[in-house]
Structures are given as structure tokens and as C-alpha cells.
Image 1 (cartoon, each protein chain N blue to C red):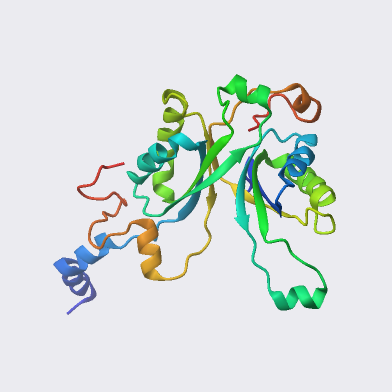
Image 2 (cartoon, chains in turn cyan, purple):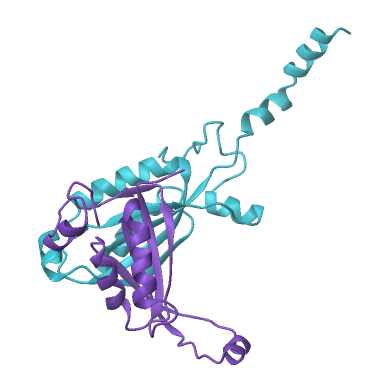
Length: 150
Length: 120
């Protein structure tokens, strides 16, 4: 059997083709900080959970901006919520786009959000949980099949 | 890799968040968010070094342009560092993306920052 024949036979194997298609590099993770009015914390946490976010921590915080600045921005109340979410790198553009739109359109929903890259996570199960990796549901492009397509 | 903004995290004893913001504002920071926390410390280390660590803490998050980070961190070290009653530590995290920053500039920040630079 010559070399070309071996290559052809290998490439014809259906199982290997399927396995190769599912193999992708692990998605990077980021820590997203969203600071909003405390009354809007639940709304923003719900909005974020639609983007494959499995872990969110809502912390009670207070703003420190001076009152005249607050008045100008329409943020008279100093009570804030800091939502810390673990997001997937490939979902970040869609999440930031959504947040920017909601900060503008939601009444009293003005806020600020930023992300910090995560450099490591320990444990395969933890990583799969944080990245919302579901066996056999990820296409090579990292899009979840049958999901919201975001 | 360099980013346009950084997130300064300053952990101080309860009641010192105003001192943190005053020091940070002096060098162009606009605003921050305070979270209450509880510090944990080894009792053995406390005894060994002969100090008492107040467990109630305030965590101040300040988003600042990258070029202001060093100045603000130095100001925090001087104002609320470990050798002061605030017993604070401060560090910065790289911020790779940000939304919601206002381009509005106050009088006090005009003196220390470039007005074209967006601040929080």
C-alpha cells in the first residue's frame, strides 16, 4: 500500500472526521465587571445570563462620584451593584454591544462595564462550567447549536 | 500587550474609601465603586509582627486611563498605604474592553488630565 492510499483511507474514516470537526482550542475566559444602579442589578444579571454566562456574583457597592457629577449623569442614588461575571472571550463583543445599547435605552440603567482577561482556571469541569462547554454542542466556530446564536 | 484602561483595586480599612478617592481624584480619576468586605489574616502572623488587622475592609474599584495608573497608585501608597491608618494595598488589573465611560470632564479633572481622554 503506497503512502497516498494510506492518506486517502485515513481521511475517509467517518469517526476521525467527526472528531476533528469537534476539536477546537479552548475558549479564553474573561472577568466582566458591570456597575449599575442596585435596582437594575437583576435586570442586567438576567440579560448577561443569555450569553452563556454560568457564574455571576452580584455585590452591593456604592458610587463615589461627587453629587454634581451624579446629577449630570442622572445617577442621584449612590447605591450600586457590581456584577462580576465570567464570560467567554468569543462572546465578549456581543455582550459589550448589548450592554452599551442597554446603558443608553434602559431608564435609570446607565452604568459602566469592563473586562479583565483571566489567565488560568484549574480543573476541566470548572473550565467547562465557566465556558458553558457542552459536549457535542459546539461547532468548530464555537457557536452553540440550537442556542440563541449570540 | 498594553490596554487603554486599567482597573485599580484598593483594599483599605473601613472608613478610608473617601481618602482613597481624594488621593485618586488628585491625579485625574473621576469616580469609583466601593464594595464592603471582610479581610482574613493569620492570627499567628498578627502576633509575630505585633500588629492588629481590622477585619472590616472596603474595596474601591477605580477605572482609569492607563497613563494615570502609576501616578494614582503612588498617591494611594502615600495616602492610604500599609504604614498609614488606612492600611491599604492597591494594585491594577489590565482592562481589555470597556463600555459606558462618559467623555464629560469636570473642572477638577481638567487640571490633571487631557480633556480629550475619556474618564469614568
